[in-house]
Length: 134
Image (tube, rainbow, N blue to C red; front, side, top):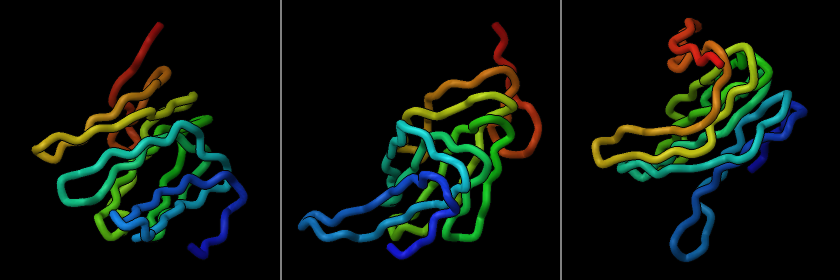
């Protein structure tokens, strides 16, 4: 991998071959920090979903940039079996939000768990989709 950081701690996702060879490495860039834990779930097409959290913004190899709406947002990104970023979502609101784990089912759906505070946008359209109150 030959990629310049934007100054933050960047997440990394790698795919290895059964014999131990490296198939690909991807590291989206962020000027802030990516937060642990990061988790990966496989899809039926040989690709993967990556979840975690990030601050400020995150730039993907495809050119797509997602922007955090608060102190941190949950990260959900999908990669093809060849390591191409297919799409990414910032899931969160004005506070600290993060995704912790993901799983996919036989129909191709992805399920994520995490924590959110107050109003959150879950589909990256800029509007609050759910509100969690104390």
